[in-house]
Image (cartoon, rainbow, N blue to C red; front, side, top):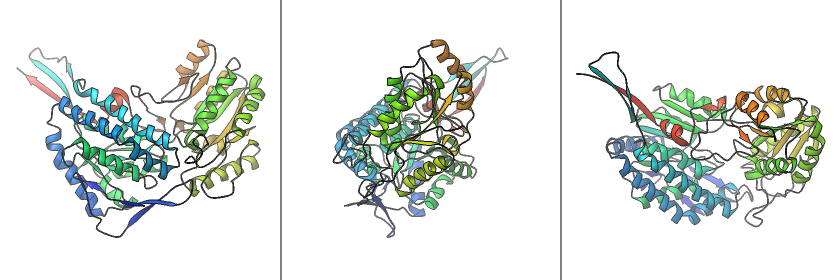
Length: 474
């Protein structure tokens, strides 16, 4: 078992206290690693290192910063086996999926490196004939990056790559559930030869994280996490009026029309709901199905959910792995129990299995109603609720009658229906006849309580910039 040290100023620093964060394999409940919990002093030193490094980092031409990002992508690929081993052990993913996550992280790093020559300002017409208005794009400074447990390697690079190419430096706080893989990424940063202080990765308890987020040298906080965590970040940001970019909860609705390919819909919905045990912000959470085909779709889903096996993916790579911890499983199960008590029909799953590991079966609930908790609140687990409708207008009304607005899906053979939904859905994304995949070049941004700002693409990169207007009189 390895003890990981915090990465500050290109050094793995010795702990200053005996506070270690224990990391457990959610498939076996065995201790697989420990990480040093930073003191408030160490956390401040990470911010200071980032602030000092940013003065010269921002002055490098974009193409020079891009070279470092390409070297980092190379280092991530070279270290994919080590990163994968750490990630698989702490998350319950298969070794193949965990190693592939490092590969995807390298790809999004290369994507953002290509913005080096494409970060553009504007020339704006002035009302004066002897004046030019120049709008410049500039880095913000030090960015605090708060990383979730579900895709911790990919999300880490999804945050820091655009921040770095824009000229910022970063202090990263990985999830305390999955921090080990972040320090394998830190070694890749070292291998890539970044200047000291440009990237700092620090594990910490919540009260120390507040120290980072409220530090006067932090100009931006970016988070992928829960609505509750987002509210905390907004509180932290008040200290220095720091910019916030938040990707928060989701409750992805799927509208399945009578003319849809039901086999395709059922297969993809099942995959979305059971990938990473449903621990994905854009995973399908609620299905609205046309009453004419509801019985058939439910039968297909019941068969597919019932055949999806749970198990330790280290031995059974094709099985569905565990939830991240006991609290996550208990929360999902309590919501299922309450839904059944409220009138939902249990079609599959719904029972906590015996033995070690935080496994929970793929669970299908039919006869759900729009006002039920299971329809209104995010489960973040392998639990799916089904609501029936008569018209697509009713389905749209129910899909939009919600606190969240991250992703959405429609299955239909009619382009007019697809466009009706595209023009009226209250969500940052709509996928037509497929489940979400977050393309690098898109823009992953939520409406309502699903967040502020967003990730990916040009607009995700520009989140890490601020503007300066230069008024030139001549």
